[in-house]
Amino acid sequence: MLFLPRQTVNSIMSNLVKKRLVVLEHVQGTRNQKVIRLTEDGRDYGENKVRWIFRAEKKALEQTDPKQVQSCIEMIEKYISHLKKSFVKFSVSYKRRRIPVSAKIMEFILMDQLISQQVRF
Image 1 (spheres, rainbow, N blue to C red):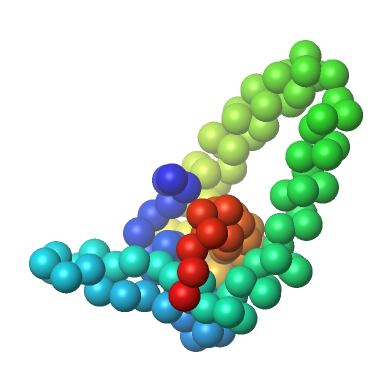
Image 2 (tube, rainbow, N blue to C red; image 1 turned 90 degrees about the vertical axis):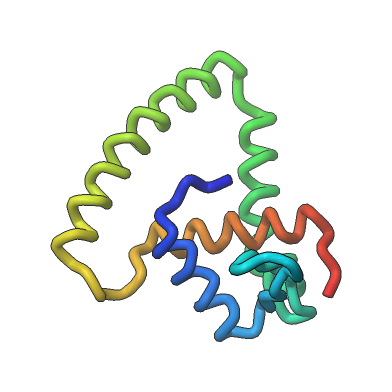
């Protein structure tokens, strides 16, 4: 899905649980699998504070020439590759600090994906 380190995902999930935006439910018959469910507050948060960002992005992409979009995607893929390497180096030297901005972005992406699935709590 997001290809994030387990620790980052756990931090994001803990933050969402603490804010009461999601609940984690244990999957019976498994040792440690959980289902993520949006709470009503989580649904409201996602719809009102997160989704508009993705809608705006989609609209902007629809108004852009497909060749330019493809070039942009290729450039961003290279950028992300370099950024991931920098994050790894940065996180090794700054352990136990606040969650980086990238984790907040991943939290928004996760919220959008949960809302898109129309998960009901």
